[in-house]
Amino acid sequence: MRIIKTIASAALLIASGQVSAAETNTVATGSSDAAPTRLQEVTLRPSRTPTLARNLWGEDVPSSEGQQLRGCQQTSSYLSNAFDDTQWTAQAGFAEQEIMAASYTVNASDFPIRIDTVQGLFVTSNTNVTTTTRYTVFVWEGTPQSGSIVAQFSSDDVILPNLIMPPGNNATLLEVSVDPGDPEQIIVQNNGTATFSIGFRIDDHNNQTQNPCFTAPPSASNAFPATDTNGLNNATNNWLFAVNCGPFGCNPGWSRFSQLGLCTPSGDWALSSTWTSLSCTPGVGACCLPDGSCVLDAQENCIANGGAFQGDGTVCENVVCEIPPQACCFETSGGCLNLDPEDCMNAGGVPGGIGTTCETTVCFPEGACCLPDGSCADGLSPEDCAAMNGVFQGDGTNCGDVSCPEPTGSCCFQNGFCLELTEGDCGDVGGEWGGVGTICEDANNNGEFDACEGPSGCNAADIAAPFDVLDLADIGAFVTAFMSQDPLADIADPSGVFDLADLSAFVTAFTGGCP
Image (cartoon, rainbow, N blue to C red; front, side, top):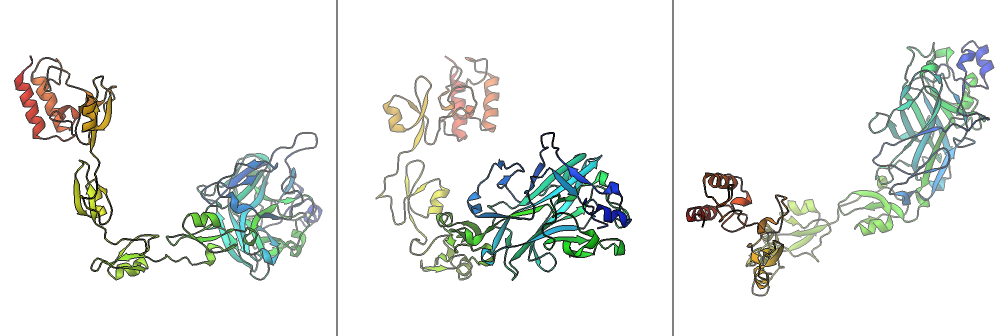
């Protein structure tokens, strides 16, 4: 960073000959004699679905599922007005690869904590172009100088959009969060300091100068991080990672604001974070599902989904979910053991599937199978029965002990209406039964049930105009319909099967002639 520009230190900076007065800017987004301009809020998430957010004026953004996990949310920030100010200081010397960060110390008993949102404010000052900025957001255990990174997301304009700001004086709040339903949450453990940190790095300015150590990134064509105009309240826990500009720049690498000397901003970074203590969410913790996966869930939901709740405040990163034993059936003996699926297959067995046990599983069942035509077949497995479109009647059943339902088919009434009935029921009401498996549908969308459409002409072969005349047009229409399996050619019986019976029926009807 060449030099951080702040109003409070403007005189010192100018005196040092490192900046000009024009480069020291405070961005106003409203005035006392006019309604404040709303700060533009852009919610950016490296996740699948939206989460609960609140805009800068305290209005709720519509929430999504998973909010039951956000019940003990707290906010950490050094800002005096939580982004409600209408004036912010643009840190116009901020260069690419530099990072603004802040550390927050909370009660040790609150850990582990889940980071729900990371917020940072960026501003433009009298820009004359639309600016596009690529950035990375960080979360650390401990301080950024001595702690470890637990999460970082970089804008790619696909999952995490770039920061785009219009010309003029503008302020944009970036809010990065993870979908509360995603099992991979940002979890921070206590590394002994009871501290976590957040920060933003500018990866690519809209218009970076070739060497920011000699010429600051032009304020007329770039967006910059903002600091609070209400004073510097916590110089110890605000951080800057600066590029190495030698004696003409700020201390290279990580420095607390209290270590920056002339580079010290006059206000705290416009940063904030919301977080949830997992120990503060009774009934919420890691849930091991039957397939061995893990999700963060409420205890009741976990149990309802057949999972094993791992305890209040637990997180998936700290638990190992094992796939429970399954029923393992051995074909040679018909015996069963509860085994790990992999062990079962290695031993030559057949796993029963997730959630099965030998106590509730019948190995290799066989029994009666009711077929679509109403007949019954003995000694079939459930799989073989299903392959024949039948209904398995249970292990150990036989056809002598079961009553298979009569098959149904289309039944056409005299007025053209159709119902799917058994042959006996259709005959009882004077209908014309279409055969086993035929259905009532209007596939050609002509307003009539296909099964109930009779021949258009004098007999079944008279299927092409002119009707009541049997000629080559009928033969051609039949051949075309037969080859394409059009129901028009299914004249032997409306069974959906196109075979020699239909061809024979057509020839018989055609040679019979019209009366």
